[in-house]
Amino acid sequence: MSSPYSFSWSNASAGTYSLTARATDDKAAVTISTAVNVTVSDSTNTPPTVSITAPANNAAFIAPATIVIDATASDTDGTISKVEFFQGTTKLGEDLSSPYSFSWSNAAAGTYSLTARATDDKAAVTISTAVNVTVSDPTNTPPTVSITAPANNAAFIAPATIVIDATASDTDGTITKVEFFQGTTKLGEDLSSPYSFSWSNSAAGTYSLTARATDDKAAVTTSAVVSVTVNPDPGGFGCPCTVFEPTAGPTNQLWNDGQALQLGMKFRSSVNGFVTGVRFFKQAGNTGTHIGQLYSRTGSLLAQATFTNETASGWQEVALSSPVAINANTTYVISYHSSSGFYSASNPFFNSATVKTPLTGLQSGTDGPNGVYRYSGTPAFPNQNYQSGNYWVDVVFDTSNPLKTTATSVVSSVKTSVSQSSDPQPKDVLKVYPNPFSEIAYIDFVLQNGGEYVINLYDGKGSFVALLKKEQTQAGQKNLIEIDGRGLPSGIYLVRLQSQKGTQTFRIAINR
Image 1 (cartoon, rainbow, N blue to C red):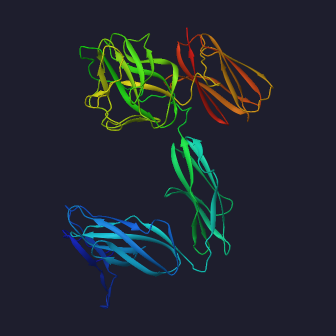
Image 2: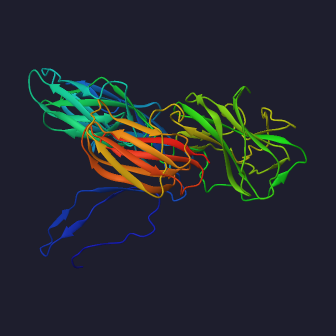
Image 3: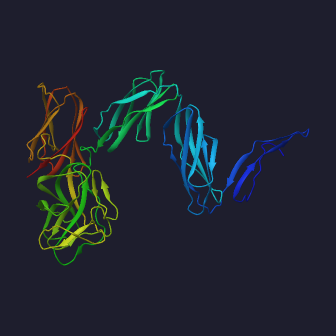
């Protein structure tokens, strides 16, 4: 009977209880504490679910407001006994039967957090996600707000830093804050003019931006939506890109059905671009001639190339003589023909999509089955399917046409030399020549803003090969880098230039 005072109540059964403490002093005076309500749920009971369906989050009203709060509630292993409605910790009312609703009358000006609390027939309780509402003074004129930057439908490259600027004013008071939202997600706020927020590292996607201004009397106005698109970085390590990683491949045996066949995969890109090549995984013993094809989803042959200089095993790649432009979110079939009937397969595989942004190997059932094949003595459109199998054929995709861009890629391994002149240029210019080349090539570039630049070399799969140059340059100054590629094997390479203006990645080839 001494402090600290405590009692452990064991084996409390399911139910709702009101707990109090009663203190008695040495002169027999007694005081009873405020009650604390607790609920003990059945351990085998699944709690109910509950959510507020109205009003919408961040809804605004004018005082004295009547706010009708609607909720849905369900219980998978029983019934709902009641749904209570709260403003903060204050209970507003309850409803014992569906549809669950409560009308809160004469709500004064202010900002409120509304929740619904569902109790099932075994006393389990679930509280909904809070819905915030604002009630404004009826004599108050709401503020005005608009986003001034970025422009509607502006485009950025991931990972993007998007600076959102807004103007806000109030004719009969002051602005207390401007909040910035992406959809329903709050990004941040600014308490003083000029109102701005910098959203960093935004990933590829399409976003709806709004600004929400609150005045000194709690009136709220939300701006018109500004839509922005963040596109995948065409200069990232993934492009030129493929659906499967270089380390991916089959783990089972090599197959042969006794006859020549065609094997393919349906794919899409989330951005416009170019198919530049075909590749397939070759297990040891896969002999014969292999011919790669790109088809439309309906079977039109768009390009074809024969694999040469194959290795004994691993990924084999052949470049198309001319890159083929493809449209975003459109289905194509990448395929190859095996003259001796050998092939790799993993079954089942395309029961789910394989995604490597911006490419997707489609889930079987999206635009028909995926993992397609066809028995044929000569190349033909594959239109049959077995267990959504993956035949380990892949596409090589780029966001720009490497044969038509003025700024092409370069290779270097042994030496680089730099010469500079003061010839000004009106904008960033990058040229690489000759391309393809066998021994020496040159990078000729001018940076509009000057400053530090870095040029790195990667192989065709995006793996780092070498740092070509890291240096400072003046704005408008011409830079010429000689590249000696004689120490590198033939193939496709990428040069990535990083400067204050951003990143450019270009593709070239060493042919011998």
